[in-house]
Length: 74
Image (cartoon, rainbow, N blue to C red; front, side, top):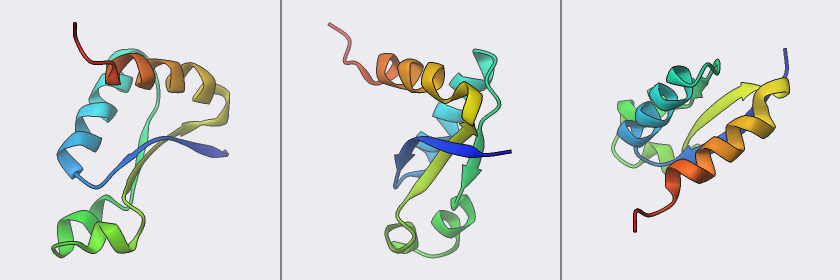
C-alpha cells in the first residue's frame, strides 16, 4: 500500500492532533518519524519533521481536510 504525506510538522502534539482529526473523519492516517521527534531535542528537524500519511486513495480528500483544518478562525 502506497502512503502519501498530507501533513508535516516539527511538533509531535500537532501531528497527533491531525491524526486524531483524520481518524474522526474516517481516514486511516499513519505517523512517520514520530519516535525521532520524541527521542532527542531537535532531532525531528534532522528527519524532516513528523509526517502524517494516508493511503494513496485517500490522499486528495485528506489534503482538503488538512487545509480546511489549518484555516484560521475568523
